[in-house]
Image (cartoon, rainbow, N blue to C red; front, side, top):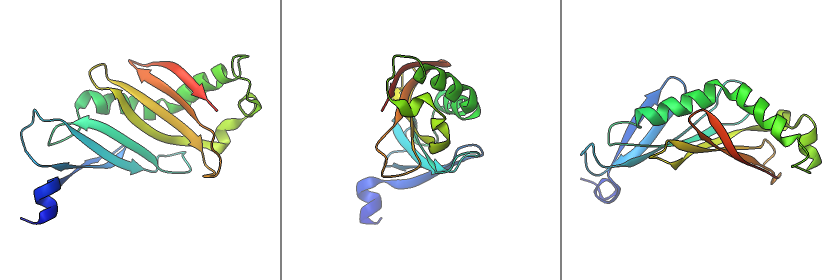
Length: 150
């Protein structure tokens, strides 16, 4: 056994048709131990890769996590329409969000916020790496909450 495998475990790969390849390192094959699965994939309609972080066991991400991520990815157009509507309200004063900001942004990451409640933080960032703006929100049970934008 190599030192890398001894200290960090063996790498396990999970391949998904929609979100691509996710990887984790497993030290113990006990399915009751939680592991973090990480990957990135260039989704249709996006200009940069999206990072996916999901929780799961030693064999695969949890099914409920995958189901929620699928829903976010597959319903992204409706989700961004809702976000766009909120950002154009008077609550947000940044003028960039009063116009067609979506053409300059992409779905940057989907990460777990609360595994027990199957809640995710979704980050939408500018394509331009030098732009420090962002839009983020929480997604749980098909609902958007806690929208932040800069």
